[in-house]
Amino acid sequence: MDDNPCQARSFLYRLDLVSFYTAYLRWLSHLSARLGVETTHRIWKDAFAGYDDSLLMSILSSGWQQAPSPGAGETAACLDARLAEFFPAADWEPSRAEAKSLIEAAPPVAQILKLFSHAAVEKEISAYAALHLRFDGLARLAGQLIAQHGKQGELIVYDLMTASRLAANKGVTGSVEAFIADFIAEPQTPNLFSAGLDFQVVRSSAREALVHVRACEWARYFRERHPQVGYLMACSTDEVAYKAFNPDLRMQRTHTLMEGAELCDFWIHAVAEKADP
Image (cartoon, rainbow, N blue to C red; front, side):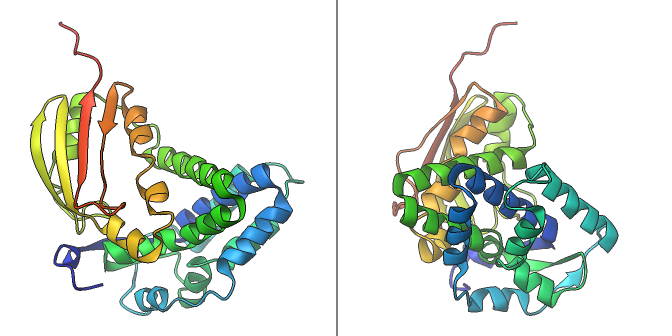
């Protein structure tokens, strides 16, 4: 994990149980509706059977400090609200209790509950480590879905990643110009998307940008850990998210690091000319 100079940049990462519960609840609710409870239980069981991950334990083992956060009672109330959001009916299958039990046996939730008593903790970690915390469990579920259901499994994963991406963006919209400016900007502080990122702006204007990404921890992580589902989980929903920000935005990308190319060539542009004032 330390042999890439780009990846030496770390950022402050908050280990928030609510975000892990939310991601897993989305998957449980969606899979149960699409495939049924019995099949969902089987996929869940197979995905995490014999789970023993030394990388996860090395990430969680030391250096974490209590972060400013709501109290334990407020965290519990937030988790209950998330359960009610994804499983709104009392007779929903699986039940809220079953859903909570499945999530609390899945990584990294099981390990976090065992190691930390605080509602939230934080420390400086690499993007690679943060991606492992955030995606290892979901990638295992995605792999099982595809192994057991083939193309249907791929489509289900795509739907789930799209829903998650749009939910994370929280309905934020704006102008093409604002998107382009943010896309090519050098971030002031590293975050999950920029730590370890090496990119070059080849050309840009207010309504167009060509960017070459030559190093990306998302690509490195998924190629090393979950190559079968990397593009599906990390890259496939980019244009959906861009269009949700502004329907005039389009992306063309002919190759990616995730698929083994030397770079990702992002061409972001507007499809409509800006109207004259």
